[in-house]
Image (tube, rainbow, N blue to C red):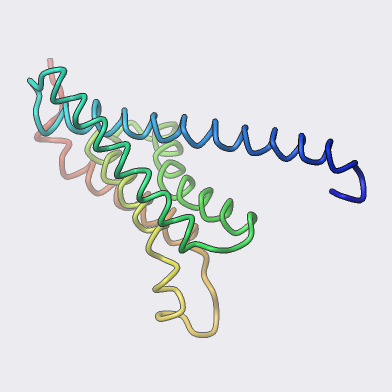
Length: 169
């Protein structure tokens, strides 16, 4: 950057980049805390939670997500490319199978979708440490087994829960 801009303008550009990154980070932390509070806690843990309880859960969620994000930032040192690859692998393993099956299959239900998203995210997160343990010669990216495992799991869970939870007129 020093080769292209004077130090003052280089500092302004870096401040702009940092402001954009911080703005995105805090927005994402608020979205995740809102999802934890509204979609998980209020829907599955305590359906009749008061506003005060939901506010406490929201605050605790923000703290937990911020700590987890900080730990990921500290311990997942690598290039920006590797971190972006890791994030897209998680998104692809989580939502890719569900999107395709939702478009081409009518048998997918919410239970299969939930299990598929959970499996894909966890698989992508925990594949890297086990990759070299299972495969010594060939490196298999998490996207391949995570994607096909997600498809298989969504179909199986949807098939087994179809009779019990299907809406019939």
